[in-house]
Image (cartoon, rainbow, N blue to C red; front, side):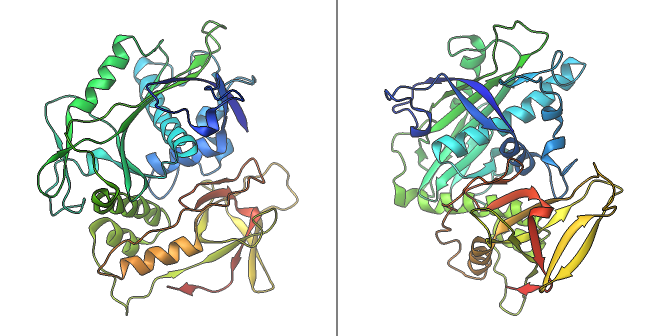
Amino acid sequence: MERLLKLALNKFDEVPATLKDSAGAAVSEFKVNLASIYHHYYLDTHGCVPPDPDPAHFEPVRFLAATDDFRFLGSGLGIGTMARRNRSSELGSAFCRMFLHDHLGITYFEHVERVLNKSASGPLNGFRLERTVSGDIPDYLCASSPELVFLAEAKGSYQSINFKNKEFEKWRKQFTRIIVKDPSGEERPVKGYIVATRWATEDGPSSVSSTLLAEDPVTAGRRPLSHEEALPLGRQIVSRHYATIADKLDQPVLAAALSSGSIIPPELRLRAVVWEILLGPMQGRRFVGGYFCPPGTDLTIREQDDKFFFGPAHPFRLGRERGTFFGLEESIFRALVQAARSAQRLPQIPPLQEIVPFHSAVSILRDGSILAPVGLLAASNRFVEY
């Protein structure tokens, strides 16, 4: 489940290692994994339940042409301008997160609108994001680790875009409308990225290919944040990123603690189901989570060797709907619970390092979240308390 995408970079001091050719220059095209795109789309766009849990049924995927490149059938998603614009924007956000995650090491994301103009005692540990003038501002406050913080703007378009046209200049100006203030009230510059994706369609010129364009502006301010100074802000970005995942895992107490800075008392235990991957290079890896089924369907459950295995409700019928598992790697989940019980708040949560692809429908991100067919995992037959 991969498609080719053209690539254009601007103002990068160094080409990301994953995008270099043998001569050290930027490649002209790269592959995108469609399951990974859906994973980022789900984390970014929907709450607890996705519109269709199966990544293979992700609407943009179903409307792709049967080509090696990423090209939509017809004129694209939606029959009207507004529908195409909204879906283009949502998909552009997923591609932005995918690019930053896969090629720039940026793992944790929070929507700027959720923390904008909040008080210094609010969600950002004494830091404050302010809009200076009216108009659009960047979409994300994000981090590759608690010590490295960034801003990012995502765009998706069917129109021709390049680094010299008016549209890109408008997007650059978004970074001039927002400032980041440290706990002392001083404005501090924050490195940012614009990631825009232009979609190719079957009805459009065959010479036009879907292309991702990336650039890195910065916000206003005189003195960049050192790693030590950025740590309180970065920790909150990581914490709020995981609050969103905890909400999807039906862990409202953990989600509330991570997003608000509240402390979970020791007598309040969190219960969860632990699952194991059944095969492949990550066999035995444990995740906290559960599964989704399409509306109107369910799965059969078979118990064997203290584990539950999940199959179709009608095992003799082919082509039946299957469930989709969503979870978080258990050691990361455990570390989050321990952090939420501590007044010191979020320590370093080590990202998942060994992610070995073994199935085209499985997506595992560095934050430890996984999206996979439920038949590839088995669940413990008892709850685990944390």
